[in-house]
Image: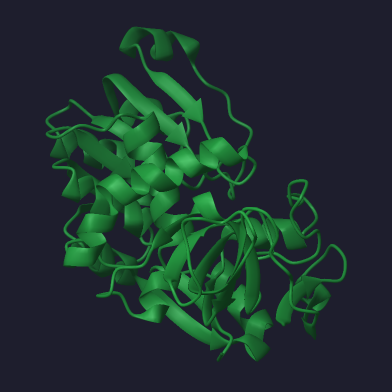
Length: 325
């Protein structure tokens, strides 16, 4: 197989594309043949040496998601057969053209989704759905505020929120992102003064749920943008993780602030995330009501350029690698 590996911790100089023996599935594991693979901020953090793969996952092959065709199955697998189109979650090893994944961490790809579109789904849509629906409890008629709304998880959250019957406000930094998020159906505010703009849009009430994908710079302004009894769920801290929170404001508004990660969860908890995604998001993907957003696709040989794009400004949706298999 061909796999992206990190030869150490650092910048793009530690990234390489190498040949490795094909992994052999055993027990409840499935081997998936991958055409396209999605990059995520966690991959860059792993490259930098600050977010190692969890135990049991390849230590030097990044990648949190898989999409492709079942190629081989372990002796205990009952759900899948070779030839099935699937997508799902892995703790690591996803940036390769052959990936091992637990059978319970996979869902069936709708026939209406092209291979590249399917590759833009797993981590973004499962993370977004788990955060705003399963954990923050976003309900019909509520208002959702999404920071980083033009990114992979952000654009997924915008669409999932709208599909759930919520009002969605997306926070962006650039004009190109503004137009892209508006095209998804969200109202758009600007990062520099988002709390004041949210107050104006909501008549001073604020958002019921805030999805924080950027981190520390948005606090304590998030406490001004949130409604009484609102929920702030923190999924990303790429711009910083240390904040000072005025506890009195937290008390006055009876706000819940919660953090979450997906990668390091136990097998059973990840399986629950995939099943919830199947129930609530997969039908919308199959019908086209929710549609994956792709920023750019790079040949696997240009993986360093793909990481540059992942970490650059102005991207809209997912950055993918094409393994050409």
